[in-house]
Length: 227
Image (tube, rainbow, N blue to C red; front, side, top):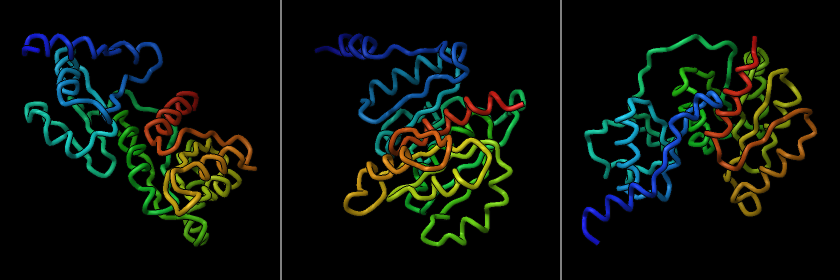
């Protein structure tokens, strides 16, 4: 296949949804895992031409290093997220407050994905890390702060017990992000997912395993309702 045909093939593989923000208030983000360098550069070129900011998730350090330096990505290796053509200039002020909480330090990459997603949308969440229930005093030391927050994204692996503790202690919206952290049966996040879904705490919302981006987007939707 010659270079011209390669370009046409990649063009057919990319079909951006540039009007998504007009429909749902959240722009399209690019899930980068499994995408080729050619696909990613095609996406960045189209977004560049449209003059839009873009959030990329699950972008590995290797993928980021191979992209053309002309794209000048703001890359965060911990969360594996990147901003493109993004400015920190805040548009209209948003109402409501949000926190991102992690049970353990190993949950931080998922929590950071949520933080970076919220920051992309010009929200600076309260970040509370390593307050899992194996040392409940760590959570209790921050509980008064968290009870004042409108929406909380809680990232927890193993048995995800922190989700139920927070769900039973704070009045705000609680969005559980089960993580794949743990030993044995906890590995892969299924135990954390099931525990979050089975939580006795009323009204806990649950997103998919390791989906910090999805938890942040749920928070953004919820904050739209805060007056």
